[in-house]
Length: 250
Image 1 (spheres, rainbow, N blue to C red):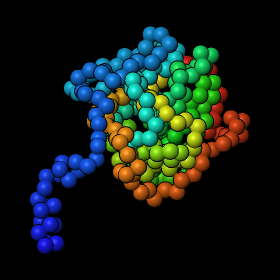
Image 2: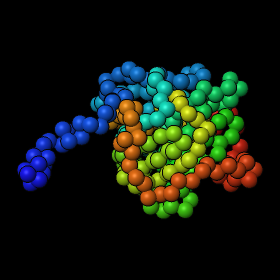
Image 3: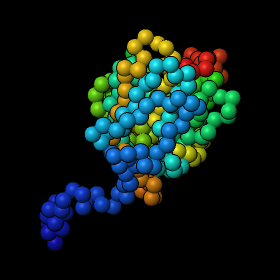
Image 4: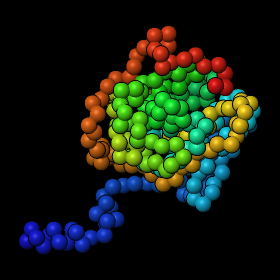
């Protein structure tokens, strides 16, 4: 009987075996239904190309543009594929909150960094909250995590937000296991960094596709992670070398 059951399971198509995972698509590939542009004025452009969401930089921008879900999310599992051009500064915002009117950004959130610098901390998390930003979970001591992402190549991200725990995998490599309670719920968003009038500004883009989410009992589908959880780096901007003062539009 056991052999018959195993033969039956192996004979099932893969979609049926995974049918108990209640994935919901967040992007239909044809328009921005379920998404909104968040910007102070003159937002950077977002276009659709062959079922892919393409975010472009706009020369002259002095404040970031965000592409945010119209729905808010608290506990969830998010998966997506992205490809970032060298020179494009971006991130995935989780549990976003509207920032005060006096802030230099429109949204505050946990930001899963897409790092285009030689530091290569893609998959780490920082808190972008206006006049300063502070790394909550960097990759300084994790070479496998730093090597997981390659600029200019498609990469698969898995992000689990369950209570105070945030886990991130990039191409199947664990990059972050954060324990923090600052943000509890809010939209998911993608960031287009302001570029001012930098030489070459506007030539880079970032692409997103296969964006899907589990919100129905997500803890049931959580994956174990080898990385030990650690709390956010609770250092002041003056004490933390990974925290710098940020002028408007930077």
